[in-house]
Image (cartoon, rainbow, N blue to C red):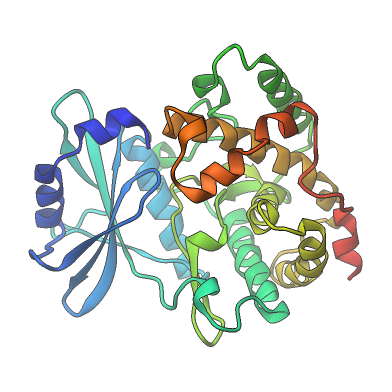
Length: 335
């Protein structure tokens, strides 16, 4: 989270948000949030999630576009956590901060189940397929989706506020900047059409969905949704599945064929796009490197285990074009 947003947040903002959504004292609990302040709350016997973001990160119209898409996906049968309305009937509540911005408050149904790693059985080939079905259904619905208001249209993938490299990496990291521009230029050259390009989640990793004992997935945290290639969404899934694993090749060989079977069951994306997964994973690798520089003033003294581990040797890997995994993703279509 941007430090300036943290500095502007206070208990009065939270109290106002609670009033807007009819949340009683003692019925709310703070959760971990990377880009927003996140809470779990109870109301009228139901369980929900409250998210408090800021206009420095997203405009009101962008948030409205997010929740409009979420609820369109839910109406189409996708496993997503639906947005709910405030006491006044609004999907987005706006609270002025002490300066020149606003905190933007939304609420969602709490996803059923729990993180997949909390289940004793963990991942199975059947769950890999269900994961693919989830993303495939979302992309199939996305292809038919039009925002309810044109002003709510979400950003394109390369909007300055979406890619963090230029803003947060110092000029002395010139090789990383160079690698970023090379990757971006290669992506810019890709063909785009309604069969391959549309609104995508952009962050559908295992930390952003719950799974029930019966294998039902519910995806949440659509804050990063943008217009991009559908294969970008697939690449993000693969990235987070393998990035810090001891044997990423073995996991990729196990995961990709099952995931792709499930995905293609819902959405007939041309398998030729599989060859672009390494390119999009490299984009995410570089952008996440920049995001961590933004969020941690001293990247050599990070206490949180995941980002600390991610940053170990990361600069050298980016500068030397080291792939996340040596795998021909076109093989997934053959499995």
